[in-house]
Each structure stands twice: as structure tokens, then as C-alpha cells.
Amino acid sequence: MEFPRDLLFRAAHTAVVAAIAGGQAALRAWRPRLGKSEKSAPRDLVTDGDLAAQQAVCEEISRAFPGYEIVSEEGTFPGSMGELRWVVDPIDGTTNYYHGLPFFAVSVAFCAGDEPLAGAVYDPVRHELFTGVLGNGAYLNGARIEAPCLRGLEEVVFGVGLSYSSGEMGEFLQLAARVAPLCSCVRSLGSAALALSYIACGRMDCYLHPNLAIWDAAAGVLILREAGGLITGFDGQPWVLGNGPSLAANASIHRQLLEQLREALLSVRQA
Ligand code: IPD
Ligand code: CA
Ligand code: CA
Image 1: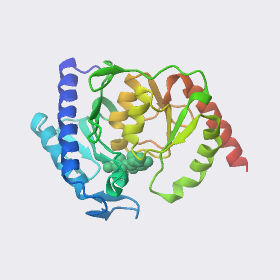
Image 2 (image 1 turned 45 degrees about the vertical axis):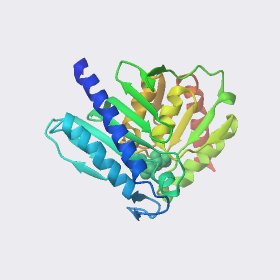
Image 3 (image 1 turned 90 degrees about the horizontal axis):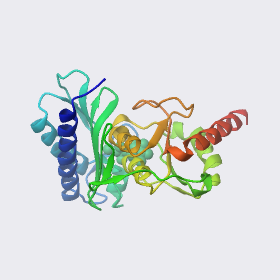
């Protein structure tokens, strides 16, 4: 479906304003190892900073786009604009944030259903703003970014993310353990939004995750795609937001990684 260009750019502007407001609120509320509670799993935290950032983001969105649904990790606010909606992660990297690890971001995306149309990922510690608009490229602090062309897996910085549910970790970790040694090095950053944005600008080259939520991925996936990256399921099929295990990667090595993952899956399941 085609969306009016001015709507996309207006949404991109709002995503930026909201993500920066959320990042500033998160920094103001940042008190490492204080002010947390647990959600569905003991490791799944929410902090005062998540709630402060969410409030700041949602205020900016509601001011510029009244009546639109906002699906945010810490709460959903209903709207009446059909499939057009906002998807927000007020702090992606809450575990880092809580422990004082300066590595987290605010993720804000404008979507048609599960398709991201415009988005921003803002790292308030480094003042880095990643943005993307469907069909119009990806940017870091206003400069165009593209994932570089790699010669092979030996050049790959292999990123991996984990879920909070220990039940999902077993097979996933075995797969990652078989493919990662073929690559240059392994990193687990603790923020999916930043990992996806980092593939977009060539700091990392792939990111394997067992079950990204829509708020983890909506803005980062758009930025990744607009920079020439790909995200699929482990079966190579297109990955839809919130839809099980995913392989996000630099397009030049995505297929090689997928082949290695398939082989790993066969041998793990036969063992
Ligand atoms: C988490 C982070 C982490 C990923 C988890 C996410 P949160 O988001 O993105 O890197 O591995 O699956 O839930 O809880 O910090 O917003
Ligand atoms: Ca998240
Ligand atoms: Ca979060």
C-alpha cells in the first residue's frame, strides 16, 4: 500500500522528537540499581526510568498525532485510526539501564499494522540518533548510512540477543554456538534496537534473536532494511514483527549465515 509522503515525513519528525524526549527523561530518572520491579519473568524488569520515558514519548506522539493507537512495552493506549499506529519501546536495554551499563535506547516507530513506515532509535548517552523512512534511506545523526559489503563470514561481528524466558534459550544457544565460531567475534549488547541499528551502519554484521517483541524491533528493522540489511526467520521466510526467531544481517552475508544456521539446526535436532 502507498502512504502519502508528507504523512511519512511528519511521522518521522514526531518519532525523532518523541525518542529524544524519552531519552532525556530516561537520563533524568537514571539511578542504577534503584527503582525497579519485575514483570512476567524474574529477569524482566521495569524501572522508574521506563515509565518516565514512556510518559515523555507518549505525550509527544499524542500531541502531534492525536487519536492514534500507541503500543508501548509498558502500556497500550487505544486509538481509532485503523491499522496506523505507533509502536514504542521507552527503554530498550532496561537490564543495562538498571545496572548502570550505559547502553540503551528509546525506540519509536510509526507502523501500518506490522509494517514500519518511519522510525527513530535514540541513544541518549552517546547522543546518537538513528532514523529511517520507508523508501527513503537510513541515517545516523542526519548522515546517510549503509551496511558495507563483506567478503565472508570471517569478517562478521556476530551479534546475539537472548530472551528473558530460560525455556527458549536451550536450542537457540546451541545454534548460536555452532555458527558464531565461523565469524570474527561475538557480541551481545543487551539492546535489540541498537543491535539492528548497528548492523545498518556497519558496526555489527548480524543479530540472532529467539523472539523479538514488536517494540524491540519496529524502528530498528526499518533502519536496518533502509540501510540495505535483511531480516528473515531461521527458515529464510520474511520476518513479520513479533514473529519468532529472527536472523537480521548485512545483506552480503545473510544467505551464508542462513545456510550455516540450517545445518546447525539439523545437527542440533539429530543429536
Ligand atoms: C530487551 C533487549 C534485549 C533483548 C530482549 C529484549 P528490554 O528489551 O532488547 O537485548 O535480547 O529480548 O526484551 O526489556 O530491555 O526493553
Ligand atoms: Ca525491548
Ligand atoms: Ca523496554
